[in-house]
Length: 325
Length: 260
Image 1: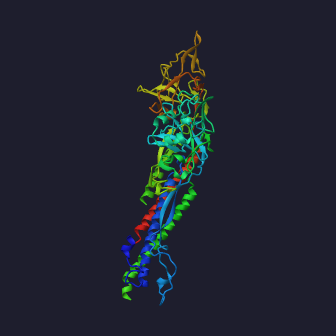
Image 2: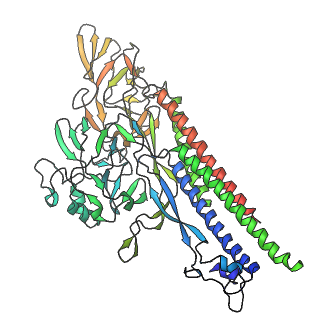
Image 3: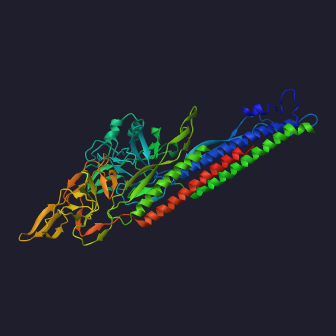
């Protein structure tokens, strides 16, 4: 541990009766590293703010919030009953230094805020916004991913794709009328069994069967609130809107895509998500909040630096001035 | 720290692309047949320090991971083929498409392009062509003695000829694409087919979902000034906030350098 290198002197050092000056020295070095950990945590905070603000206009973007936790560097002495000192009372008898006062801070996690983003009306027939906690299921070369980016496009072969070109998946195999439900999943149900197999990325053929093709379906495409896509009067397919038990388990992979590694996380049954055609969900970044976080992080960082500087000065005095006394 | 700097730089770049798009839209607010564009942003990749759901020990999984985003990129920028407003000109060779479709034209260099700007003119031989000299396909020649040329909603070009009465002299065809947004804008209101747009599909105006033709009108630009201004304000503010973050990152960096 770097602290030990700086000041290996402890209160209970063998042959050492816990001189108070050195006790102070130990405090200093550890405290310095505590403020270093604080400063680097605030740097991460600024990184997160920078990314959130950079994506303030990204469709379907969900902001990230770093969370911090305290981290006990060392428990130097077991916390036990206070001993009554025999003889004269010294400082160390009053303060039980067990490491609990020297907590470092580390980033515990970045948690994605899945709150609904602002909806923007575009009137484009293939723009859809998900109102509710659901995700669209898309097929990527890396396997099935989930997205809330609803600016869908039609590929040259008529497939319904995201703006990155990843095909959107329907709830069941192509040709909705008279089609065999995949794995016995009834229409309108995101069955966990199907999803699990697909999420494992092992069944691209089954994914391909669930591509939505709007070729030669005319121009009058309407998408109902439950995800059913109609061309004129005909039901073409039903978008698979997937909801998750625990959104925090989703992993961002960029381009508005989320990866779900735990098949059991997918909720079956009828979802609560409502689709709105001609509307897009924009980013859920709140600039006011981000700017506030930025100011806070900036100031806390400054405070941490101040503390570091003070420790530096104190150590300098310890090194230079004590000898002069 | 360098991360925050570069991350906010990607944001500035994206907002700059947005303002460039808005300025082009606003510059073309009075261009006949112009279609506004839309810029879409995508978040860049994430640096994953800790997997969400990663194992922390027997039976314990981390409920959240640590993922740091690295910024934003311009995902797509494409045209929105929404109908523009009709501008009545009462000029016989001004044709407006009401609905979907493009006029196929042949450029002077022989290439085929597609346009929605239907302000046609006739050349010395009586051929219908755009202001840039691109000929309408199939070639439509108006006889020099034609009187009173009318174009029907279905694309039939009729003219009254002396001693013959009214005769059909041409049939205008329209073109659609499986994916119009995949067309490549060439300027001059012209578009070219690409792999993404799919092959052109020819048809008679007013049939199979194609728009019909309105004579004596041109399609104005579909730029919505109010929307563009709102976009501009949002873009400007987003840009400002990006520079603020950059400033803070710089300050923090500077402060670190000055500790000692």
